[in-house]
Structure formats: C-alpha cells, structure tokens
Amino acid sequence: MKELKGKVAAVTGAASGLGRSMALAFATEGMDVALADVDDRNLNSVENEIQNLGVRAIALKMDVSRGEQVEAFRDQAITRLGGVHVVCNNAGVSPLGAAWECSVADWQWTLGVNLWGVIHGIRAFTPHLIAQNEGHIVNTASVSGLISPPGASAYNVTKHAVVTLSETLHHELREKNSRVGVSVLCPAYVSTGISNSERNRPKDLPASERSAETLARQAMLKKAVASGKITADQVAQAVVAAIKEERFYILTHARIKGAIQARMEDILEGRAPRDPMKL
Ligand SMILES: NC(=O)c1ccc[n+]([C@@H]2O[C@H](COP(=O)([O-])OP(=O)(O)OC[C@H]3O[C@@H](n4cnc5c(N)ncnc54)[C@H](O)[C@@H]3O)[C@@H](O)[C@H]2O)c1
Image (cartoon, rainbow, N blue to C red):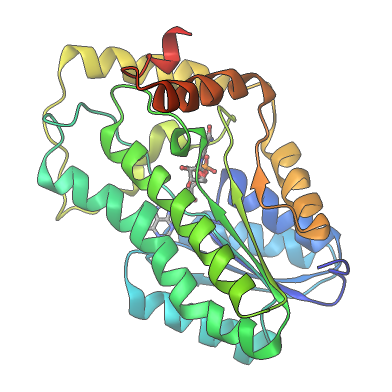
C-alpha cells in the first residue's frame, strides 16, 4: 500500500509498547485508527493522544484470544471508521520457563494470546481486505520466531508459528492474485512492557512455580528489554516503511542475523542446533 493517508488501521495490543507506537505512527501518516487491548485505562489515553493528532480513533477493551471479541473489534472498526485497510495483530505476552516447567495454564495463556490472537485476527479481517482488494496485514512475531533461545518454550512456539502462518498467508494471497499484502515483524529487544506481561495474566490461568533458573532468566530479560537500543517508535517507522514498500520480513535488529544464519546452516548441514544466545 503506497498511500496510507485517509485509510484505517486496526491495532491490537495498542495500549502499550510497539502497538501504541504503531498506532501513533499510522495516525501521523493521516490514518484513522481502531485500537484494541485488555488494558482499557492505558488504551483510552492512547485514544486521546491519537485524537489530538487530528484523526479519528476508537478504542475497544477486548481479549485477542477470544475469537468473538476479535470479530466484534472488526465490526466496530468497519461500522465506526468506514472500513479497515491495515491490520496489526500485535498483542502479546512473554512468560518464561522450560518446556516441562510451564504448566498447562502457562501454555494455554501464551498460545491463546500470541498465536490464537493472530489466527483470530487473520480469520476476522482477511475476507474484508480481500473483498476490497486492498490492505496489509502485519503480524508481530519476534526474532524468537526465527531462532530458539532456551528458557522460553511457549513463547518461541507461538512466534515460530506466527512466522509460518504469515508466510503461508502471503502465499495464499499471491495464489489468489490479491493485492492484500502481508508482513511479519521480528524484533529483538525493545524497551516496552513485555517483560512485565504477567500484569495481563487472566486469573483462571495461574502461573506455575518458577525455578531459580527461570527467575534469573526473567531478571536478565527485564534488563535486556530495558536496555534495548532500538525504540518502539523506530520499530513502528520500520513497519510503516514495510507496508509502503510491500516488504514481507521486518527484521529491525541486524545483529541477530548471524544467529538466524547459524540455525539455517545447522539444519542444512544436519548438525545439532547451536544455542543462539551463545553465538
Ligand atoms: N519488546 C520486545 O523486546 C519484543 C521483541 C520481540 C517481539 N515483541 C512482541 O511485540 C508485541 C507487542 O509487545 P510489546 O513489546 O509492545 O509489549 P507490551 O507489554 O508493552 O505490549 C503488549 C500489549 O498487549 C496487550 N495484551 C496482552 N494480552 C492481551 C490480550 N489477551 N488481548 C488484548 N491485548 C492484550 C497488553 O495489555 C499490552 O498493551 C508482542 O507480540 C511481543 O511478543 C516484543
């Protein structure tokens, strides 16, 4: 999509971090924005920030893991803003833990938000974009969708799944000769609320007890996220550019490419995978 001005963007996880920055970047481009998040207090202040930029914004408190709520979000955006052109399936959570240490509730929560949230977004919005033969879908994965850092099993599973879901969706749309584009966003550390995502955990999916190792890793993650060199606003600018240039992969952190290459080489050479955190 070359021209964004006057179009409509729908962003999930818009109350904080990357979602908030993407929503503001779209508004700066002259787009109206539909915002969704479980955190309605912060969502409402983002709605105000966007309205102050002179475009229309609507905000809906919703849970992306619930298909009917994502469909209601689509319906609200279309009814109140007149359509949707750019969809960012972005909401995410990142509890840590080894594969055996995560409880069923940990797995369900992480898959529900990070994977089902994207699946519901694709199912709800893609037919609308195909029908208007214009639009772009941006799915937020992570570098953890391209490499497998230890201690984050559930997170890695969801992010790898979002990468292949996005690649497959891209092929499916090309097969139909649709003009709807797809991008997958794969950042490394960016200073946002992601290392504090327990704040969003539903009460009926309680956390399992964490090992000392996981607690230490959690502290390291907090530090790494807080000291991320690339800002959420810079990531949002990369997303805007990718939509305009119709670029599929959005890799914001060049230094991580060595670890991705190492993984590919290990696969092709038939070697056991090297630990990407030790390369
Ligand atoms: N920050 C990083 O270092 C980083 C790196 C790679 C990928 N990501 C991905 O970026 C995306 C955005 O995360 P962020 O870094 O901005 O973190 P963040 O915590 O600042 O923002 C995530 C937003 O998602 C919302 N959310 C959580 N559960 C939800 C649900 N069930 N339904 C609706 N909204 C929900 C939160 O309230 C929050 O506003 C996530 O998918 C994350 O995995 C982040």
